Image (cartoon, rainbow, N blue to C red; front, side, top):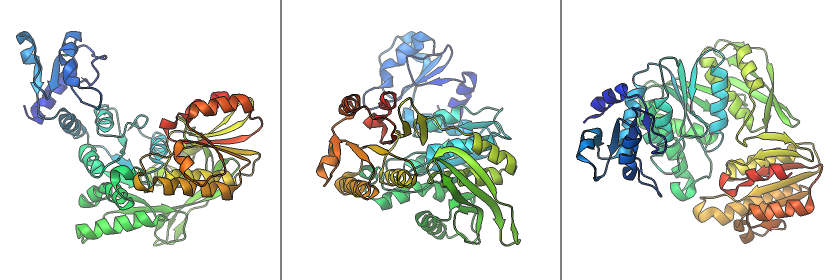
Length: 449
């Protein structure tokens, strides 16, 4: 059965489940495999629970009466992506593709908020941004939506190429590139090449790109891809940033971070000799580094005809969730929680921003960084060196990787040791930066502080 035939079957049963514990009546079960599970083993169970059909990619033993409800394919994951692409093609609407090392989810949420001022927006939920999450997002598309915002993550070369070929974005942006997942990418150059696969697709199809003009790596990537494609006519490239270059369409600058980011921005068209008045926005986000994410949301909204007043309204009313750039006031302390992701680039940004905040006393609880391969020791030492220069009142580091550094700070093996120390020391009246990857489980600390 080819994809078009399979999609016709999906139209008759428009619900795909990949979880045998959740089998809505008359749905289609698709047997995905992972490191610790094999969906093929649960196909019969899914049919017995109410699924109309089960798609499998292994031979399974079954009652002959179920034979006509089993669909065999070569690769269930590839079929999932192909079906999702076929579903996406049923809708002629803008699809904004987003990738990058840091800021993907925050930028996606800001863009969603801005576009939602005028449109019915479908956006990636949480960080469902891999080769399973992106198809699941696309299957949520329906005729009520006007525009989609699809986040795409990567940890290996070729990941973004696969995702853009599934989502087929009509425009897109790379937030930034940094030294993350180096164990999977092999090098920083591998990171750039993989994230640049979004540029490859958009430039090949002559589709608009939004680029941070201040980021030399992104500028180099765009120019390299454009040259590689041999384009006679360059695609539309819309620049945003904080610099003075004449080709920047949306320009912004930080006013203050006390502690929430306040900034101003304006539209400028130097060819037409036009600049709008500066507009100030008071956000609910911590960190000057979030200005780039704000400007990205502004330029996407601008190109999609969202009025300035509504852009500002969306940004001023956006409140972060999921432990990203959040300031939490507890009974005892002021917590700056960014405990979802950590890599050298985002860690540096968090430390720099905390250093600039005019508050005291300051305490930092920072978790180890993963997937750094051969540069793991080097990158953890750089973080320690930054912390020494920052001269915070107190620093706690979590993870044995820090024991390999030349480090004057207190080091804990895991979050459980930190919990014990908090109960013993009971910090009071502090501004506390909590930064680490989800695997560090530092998100468990705020309730104790």
